[in-house]
Length: 291
Picture 1: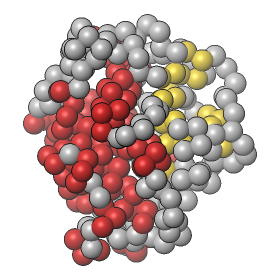
Picture 2: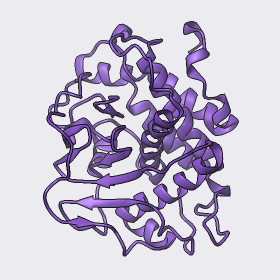
Picture 3: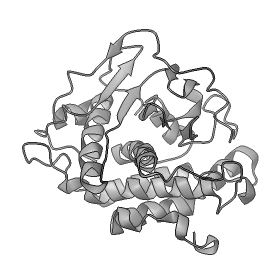
Picture 4: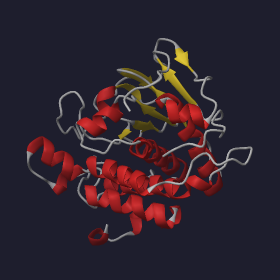
């Protein structure tokens, strides 16, 4: 996705812990919901990615950069950290208009490890949303892994799909969708998979409306999405499908172990959101055979 150069992204709540922002770069509930169920360090499917999260919350030691230098869409187009800030500004604005009682989230960028309201996490868990502190955590090096290890297309919408998916978990946290779910079961129609597919759908809903979302001055944050950019997002959704990950790591596909959904499911629900909006994202009412 391409930001309009003169759009105002200054209200996006993003910070980087541990080091200053770079000009370029790569690219559970009540524990952590990770967008990828694979260790970047070992390449092994680790469905229990909450394992690296231990201890209480807190703030990672080291400097915190609040990205004050990221003001415009032009900055977002040039710098990945600023792109995250632009995404946060657009996502907050979109969901304020869609969800009654909406409260904003924030993105915390980090490298290596981070301390969160859910505990301590390493980059191995991939991007994740932490409900207790209502924050999305991203090591932007994951975007390189998304392409080189997971096989997704390169492209900004592949990156922003990941952000919007995690923001979808924030919407679920606010709406109560996370409450009363069966956390232990896995499989293609499990509550965990339904939750992840709904987040994919919410990501698609934002993409579908992105070119209409305006800053305080009435300028749209983003230019119209192109067919190639949509293809990039669909490629990213497929790359983190449980079946794709299982096949690449073990050579076998075991649907009963799925926690996030198959590639086809993830793509389909992203497209449902993109073409029909968030009202079509009730994955919990869909019969198992049609999910």
